[in-house]
Every structure is written in C-alpha cells, then in structure tokens.
Amino acid sequence: MKGLKNIRLKNYDYSADGHYFVTIASNDRAGFSADDLKLIEEEIRDLPAIKGIGLDFHVLMADHLHLILVLTGCGLKLGEVVRRFKAKTSKKAGRKLWQPNYYEHVIRNEEALRRIREYVQNNPLVEKIEFEDFYKNECRSRQGRDRSL
Image 1 (cartoon, rainbow, N blue to C red):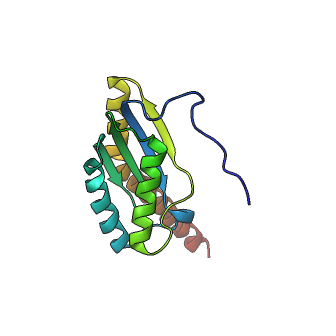
Image 2 (image 1 turned 90 degrees about the vertical axis):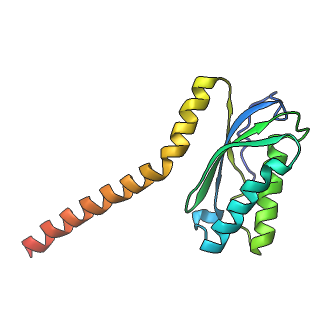
C-alpha cells in the first residue's frame, strides 16, 4: 500500500484556537450525487454542534469542499474534526465519499482570512468561467476544422 505524504506543519498544534482553511476532494475526484450534496450540506450545518467548532464559511462544489473552520477550546485536533466529518458523511452515504487526505492552511491574520473567504466565495464562479472558456475555445476550434473539410 502506498503511504500518504505528510503535508502538515511540523511542530504545529492543530488543536490550537484559530481559523483553518480546509479543502477535501471527493473520492477519485468522481464528484457527488444530488443526494450526497444534500447530506454533506446537512453535516456541514451540524459541525458547530461539536463543542469548540465554528463554521466561518464554506462552499460545496461538484467534486470538492472548501471550509473555513474556527476552533475555540475544541480539544480536538483539526485532523480529527475532518476525519469524523468524512467518516460520518461516508457512512450516511453508504460509500466512500472522500479522498484519503485533505489540504489545510492555518489562517494567521485578518487579511489572510479576508483573501481566503474571497477565494472560497468566488471558486464556483472561477470554475464556471474556466469551463465556459474551454467550451468557447473548443467550439471555435471545431468550426475551423469543419470549414477545412
């Protein structure tokens, strides 16, 4: 079995109070069904029910999730919070929803928090624009090929 690369900060206490930006990708980037999206949204809304966990902002995309979590006297490390969330949603879905790891960024100041919120908020639009640009370029390319036939 291939080992997972450790991408966490060495000597950082991931149970420390603060804001954390987390991105979790769907298993094999296969995407979520409509039912998956609904149950994931429900579980996201339930995260603040865990003592010491706040939800600052989130965006659920077709094949990944962006979260800004706030830990305040939580007692759990960020990895355990993410592990529990992934396990609970996968169990409810009846299949593995998530890739084995996740990406995180420790948010250290208000400016970084503002920029990350902006990124998360605009992420669906950026993905749509990239697809639309691809589609327009592909149509132009096909039209050129059709004329040369």
